[in-house]
Image 1 (tube, one colour):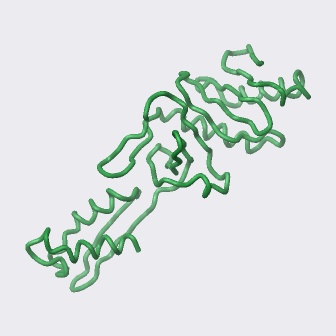
Image 2 (image 1 turned 120 degrees about the vertical axis):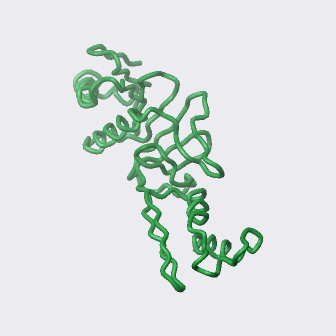
Image 3 (image 1 turned 60 degrees about the vertical axis):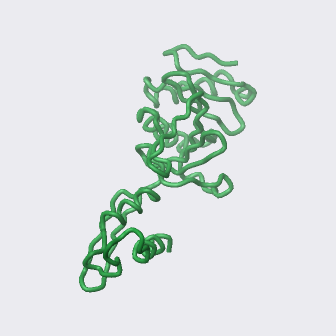
Length: 210
């Protein structure tokens, strides 16, 4: 319905055109495409005219990959960090996507004309978080709540449900760090695991916790 409204507005807006846009022959496809791209984030948008009176719009929406949070705002974003749409935290019901919370000092959300455009974070963080998210899904007694990116370089912090914050090094293998986490949880800390504030896995064979 929103897209139809944009088309009807262009058709009926006499101020912008010498020739009336109700005439499909002179209908400005480029202008419509620009109008839609300003408001929506599509992976593909094709507009075709079929004379005398039909307009065909082929839209392929981008797929959600992550939920991104900065300050009080939440966004669905694709795998490359492009913003698809803003979402209320109350509407995030399913944990189908990793929740990334940015805690750095800078504003890393770029703008394109009148809409949010892209999260300006190195793509390695998105790839790493996706791998972490999938790993935690396979663990029976460890559930990830959200993934934190802040001003610490090469670091992703994972908030664990009923547990400590886990520090991961994005330059080190995910599986090896997960393995270290399980060893210290099951063999060393045991019942003390949930009482810890954090566990730092970033430094090779050394593990730090408090």
